[in-house]
Image (spheres, rainbow, N blue to C red):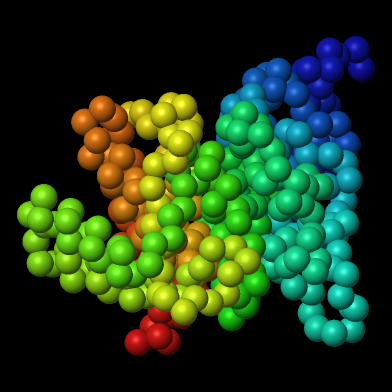
Length: 350
């Protein structure tokens, strides 16, 4: 057989290999030699479909829509990840090499999200990073890196930007709703991102907050419905405290205000549209599902105030997604995806 350029190898061999063996050959070839973007473009549509099927074989039959872009995540999978015994379920990867410090005979292994936020375990994500390491990053790295936000703020839906991102399942949600220590650690991640966006947390005694809001109502003429909603939020907020403080003799409210660095830090996201708008949607949804409802509502209120600022031009579409993340039933994602187990859980709560 004449020599064939490497970038044309699958097409050339297809003319010399029996049809019934072609599928097996392409599967073996694509597993041993990762295809480059250039090679992808030389394949016809039928051949590309076969190669994609071979790449996805270790997903255990889960159907995914693969990208034809040069940066396709599947093109960069290593030989180790191809032969790993760890599998993906419901758009989630379970990572090898990440172990809990708890004895193996105590119970089935905790979900990665729980171990990541458990201060006694401090599991690393798929890139070998702990929560503390990520939160110590400078703002510039938080802005430029795109594969950490899915770990800090997981949601039940898979991520198109990070195929290795774990997702929230029922076990994870139950753990956060029953364990204050996990919620406290999640709040640390949230408040680090608040600072990144230029916000700050303000804890006010409830009586002081009531006086402040009464002045605002006198000045703006807020309607009675808004007053009732605010009162409800304040009574619930008495359960949320600053990090390291577990109780107060005087009830406090949790509020989010513009911080001293707002003017500088808001430049990254207080625009018509920015990738941070997607991050904010994720953060809001994560907070709700993992039982930081007060923080979620306070964040949304602060975002709405920025949106209403005449000096800021945030798109209505972004606000729509933020509103959906806060107001829709939990089982309905802002992009209309529906999570069956969350729908069952919400039904159990009624």
